[in-house]
Length: 54
Image 1 (tube, rainbow, N blue to C red):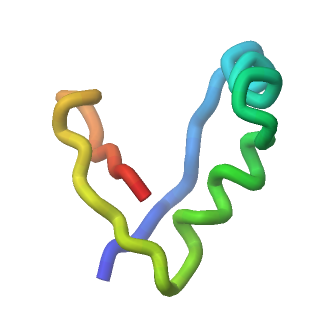
Image 2: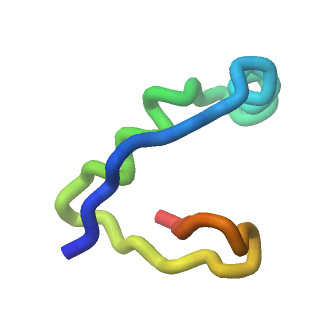
């Protein structure tokens, strides 16, 4: 089972994403803690850290 330690975000980018997508950062992050969520590795977006689609 995958363990998530936390999330980092840029405040300005979070504000832009909320206006663009209509969902705030805390709501978006909540899907990663859903027991029924399917987490898929996203190696194309970072070579320095693990990233996932949910």
